[in-house]
Image 1 (cartoon, rainbow, N blue to C red):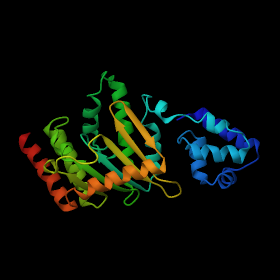
Image 2: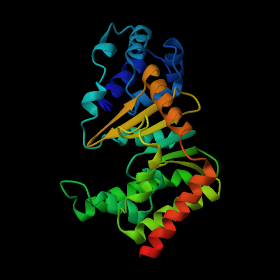
Image 3: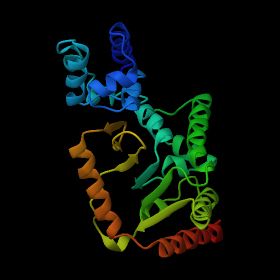
Image 4: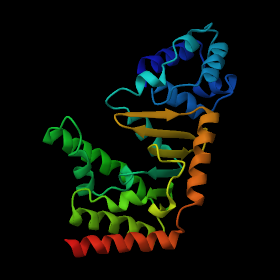
Length: 266
């Protein structure tokens, strides 16, 4: 995200003698959305930028110089904007094709995933990323908020990332979260064949006072989607895949069975 863009917006707002709420009202936005743009955590849509220009009398400056998500997505820390949003969400729905979603990862599983990156990370860099993943998982320390659903391709359960012992611990951790009612997990079985989310990882996020967003990720690239049409399309894909997934109790039984298989293999 462009912090310079957000700083310029804040400077223009303050020069106009407006509070964030006053600007939000004039631009038909929420105050928190304006705050996220000013902090560099969100990129305004083109319509948002036009309304901000109109509210501030800045011509088309905010529209013309609006950061392009495609450029930001190529940065090494492309997940950072989504991480900030994740901490503010009231509901998160994850889909994982090959790896356990970050907020559900155990320390050893996270370290095993990070050890497979190329070029290899230095040990201190890997440690830093592991700490970040574990910090993300702290949102589950609250017993009810955010509401978290995870839709997992069966590949997530069957690929032995880190070896049998690591997988036993990881799958047991997820199953325990399900047993406690903290997360809801559904598995898309191999027998299903193809499904609408086979192209990569997806995270859907809802908030108390701003529109929902989606985050998709592929190899070395991630993108936050806040276009209402695109978010709706991705939500529909998720819902369609979820409708073909195993029910909660069957998914939990499969998690426990897979963990048991790894335990015996070890």
